[in-house]
Length: 423
Image 1: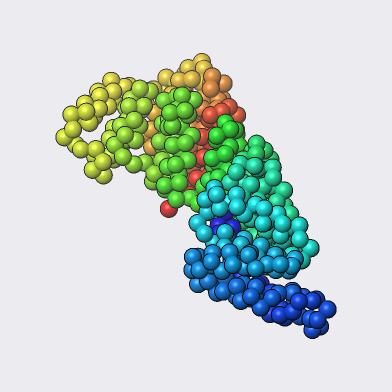
Image 2: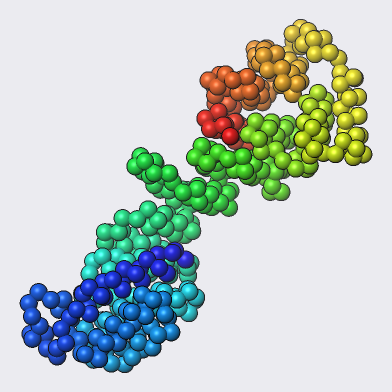
């Protein structure tokens, strides 16, 4: 439940009670009140119980507050006294740790206070905010939106209130429209010189992902990483795209290698499983030089033990693959003479894995000029080569030329890295 229900509203009500209600005269008839006072007709006993309740609430002495509020409810005779009792009962219920029972108990007194003509506009807005929280907790999202909007219409200017409206709308099923509304809130915060909370981005991502809105997930992932580009966030984003059980099936070995390359660039590659999977994927595509480079990096960082039998076996396999390969120069010459662009693309991949970026860029350009079968992969890989060599503008152009998912999503992550590289 939203924190406003439990704390800030209670404080606001107690302050209001101290300034307006408890200063009212002890009188039995309204026409006996002096001009200019708060206008409440309270008996001496009611005022004493109300003051005791207010004092106990301010001290967070809930047991004493319950005793005083119960006495006040028993003593109340006229409309004013019942109003004071309702207000203090709400204050007490809003102060106790929220439970299903305490939230249900709040509904009737809150509705009565919202409808009461004596309730001040500011208080009515806060009561609507509370009712919105209660409806949200009960998964009555359409009702929650209505109450939250009444709170906003009543004058509450609160970023978290606007966020709650979006959340209720998205939980009610308007996921894409809600994400668009949240994007507008984020832009408004940025324009006002504020930094939107990270949980706003994470919430949008979670709800869009839950609803399999892959294109929107990709867009929001970029927004999130541009705002919060930590290595851990990069790792989470890359993992979510291609390494969860439910997303891995969308990707080929080549796609996974492109994501692992991004993990290296963002310093988010970690753990034995990452390195081993990277190596195995590279070996499966006969990128033996890249596989050996990853193994060397892992052993140097003591992530993979040099004496481990499986590591030794992988190193031997990478070494054998390198020995069996024709030299890059021989392969490049053959690709240049080939009738199609596919051999040039494979040589470009080999150069990219070996981190020979100028050579990779040249071979990808040759492959594209000869109408190779998979232009999306060529643009993505040439974009990676440009990015790693520092030519951001050409990298962006290649990433933008990718048109097929999931390569478009991989390209979007690489573009985000260009704009917000990890520390």
